[in-house]
Length: 253
Image: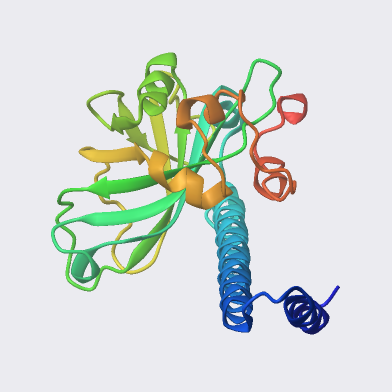
């Protein structure tokens, strides 16, 4: 029954029963106000949900593009030995530095970890921070792909913060398949603009952005549980655009 018909029936009932029309009008006004507020709240929640989904998809798309460009890009191909040993992989597009960030570098991205069944977890949000990297003026940005190779490195990552070079040894990745990086806890590959290339990665931190996960997935999510595959909040399947690109153990020699 629409609002206009309900209003007419309420007024007729008031006349028949002798109920004060002013009171009926007040009740109708209160009901209409409640309905209007409720509808506005629904529209606001719908708008927030759409915004969350768009941000989620943008992050997945950006990370997927950066990963593909670095792992099999113009610089070369990441050696199979690095892909095979990866326990977790963080992709952090568009790390800005130099004049764009006072005193260091900063970026946000996604990380996924490989489970016992060789499947990759739905991604968690992380940030990359570096206090000072001493770059030349004119430095712009870089995309990073970080491979976590050792249990110690993975443990530090899942705890919520890992300091590269302190919590785990870190080396800059090379595309030379004869290079032995098996002893490194973390290997970092970059695709750079400006003068970011060759910057030291020691002193960098990768931090789990637990508070951002609720905004990212639209529901409460535990950071460690997500990386361990115990929570799978993305019901849309969109995260697979990224995780399906991560190393497939069956196709690595």
